[in-house]
Length: 383
Image 1 (spheres, helix red, strand yellow):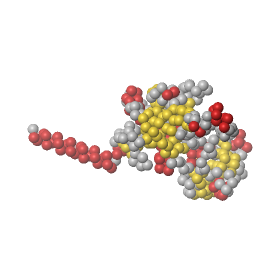
Image 2 (image 1 turned 90 degrees about the vertical axis):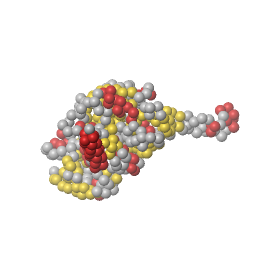
Image 3 (image 1 turned 120 degrees about the vertical axis):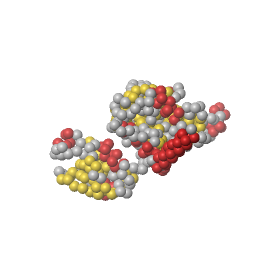
């Protein structure tokens, strides 16, 4: 008996030692491993074969729901100054305006806890004008939040709350492995009724040219997304985050089965820069571009060549300094082929400011290459 007990204890000791080594040196081999970096995130292990084993929708919902929060914001309304404010008769009848309670407007949205120390990912438009932000967790706790930073061009923002203990953080999924027809759940706070889960499928992937954001990489779903869902989670059948619910197509404000979520891969990149720097830095060359239609390609005698037409070159921009001109056809940037304006915008934005890259052009039927020093994309103008 003692011999069997010693064998058992030795086996357990070896197994624990192996687990410790794997956890220390190769944590990505463990499911839902926490990865370090700017902020500690939980990410599920990428799968091979392209298939995602479903764990049951109720289990997926129970896994993700604790990490989804309700966001309540209030904004002080600045009233115009009355021209009779200093008139004693005005004050006699209407009182002192300075002593009146300020008028406020309130709105609601949703967010996703991305780290145990209280960072929350949501939409920029949810907190854009907020003077006060309150977050309600699924366990009933509430806390004031402050904005870490935001990125209007992807409609993403990061806020933070301070509560004791480790908060329930979402596990990031692999949106690149998602397929049209996959089952998904949308979790949020529609119309302020409280945390709600709706079910649907992925209707389309990589949606862009929607005119919603400057940088677009949407997952389209028919899971019901309504006002108040903005900033909430779109999760896969395993309860892993694959998107941040952002917008709906609807003439009446209600769900018509066409909702859009920002891909979690896009959200993660923006989120890490916001947490580290308070904003997102992107590359810029300073050109306006237009898609090459069949008619334009024929008029320029391009044949099967692809690219985008340069329609504008901003003065003193990196493009002007490199010799790029209006009417040039931009074919490749940093040896990456450019097929349309979205690819061009994303390619330039992902290049670090200060880097010198080759840009391939077609000018008057002749192929040429110029060296461009990437600049820093200017902040979007406030509407």
